[in-house]
Amino acid sequence: MTTTASPDVSTAPRSSTGAFRGDRRARSARSILVTSALAVAVAVGFVVSMMLGSYVLDAGSVVAATLGLPAEASAVFVVRELRLPRALTAVFVGLALGAAGIVFQRLLRNPLAAPDMIGISAGASTAAVAAIVFTSAGGLLLPAAAVVGGLATAIVVYLLAWRRGVAGNRFVLVGIGVAALLESITGYLLTRAEISDARAAITWLVGSVGLAGPEVLTALVLAVLALVPLLAVIGRASGVLELGTDAARGLGLRPQAATALVLGASVVLVAAATAAAGPIAFVALMAGPIAERLLGTGGARVVASALVGAILVTAADLIAQHALPTPISTGIVTGLVGAPYIAWLLIRSDRRGARR
Image (tube, rainbow, N blue to C red; front, top):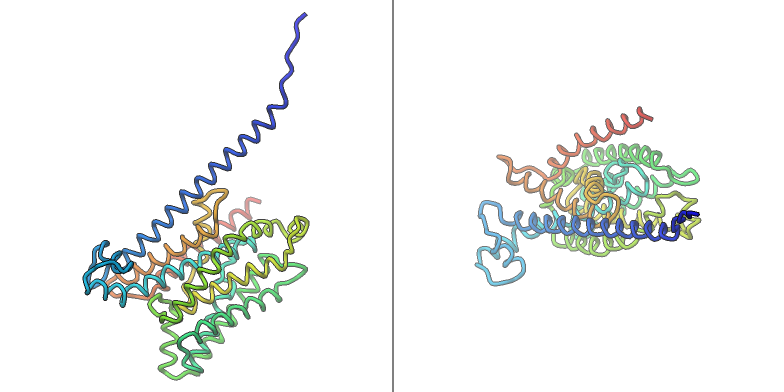
């Protein structure tokens, strides 16, 4: 009499657990590799941006002058006084916009839900222009006005879009309408301004990383250093919020309070970046999808998106300053790249809707 051995079912859970752990390790390794590569790219762009100009420097002189190591007096002057503030502004504006952009897109589950599309940047811009026109704002008054304008706009859009919760599509549509209204108000303010104030405001509205003074740059750096790590730490909560209000509440999370905290921190980042460089368009829109494509299914998305944002702004400023016969503003370059990206995004969304 022959007997057939029954399969050992106890090995099935072990094999599935091992596969899960292996997949998790692979995703973690990819996240570390991608994030490290992005950080290196940011550092390289930061150094290159201070090497180029009418007085070309080598990388060693730039690094030495930046870190306070022994270097030629001319190199120290050029780096510290002329190029370092602009390079720092580009990096930190990109970090702020990249981190804020992916938070909005993930929470609202819409690739168009970027701060510059839903009125946040427009609110910060209108408040900052009002401060320039009515008070000739300087120092910390400009970033303060931008933060207040961005927060006020976010609250208005949130309340107008609220219908037993906030749906991403409704939030985007309301935000686009509010942004159009604010842009009209900004245009009206410019018509009422003195010529010198209007010229300063228009220059700022185009968007350039060479505009920030020491106080504004310091405020931006402090905001990024405080809020980007915060958003990265609470990224898990953001993942739970993506499941929806009911699911988040069932998992023990207070969805409204968590959403307000995450979006509030993101709005402050956008406002600080806008105050420092003006409205740099489309960086927040593009950074998140690029980071997610590089990371795959997991990883530190906020950190990666922030680094991608820094790369985009630094690269755009390098092109604006050195790749053309006449230097132009950083925002013009990002606008030239971002407009086709929006068109491609809308076409892709329409094709997906047609397939369904």
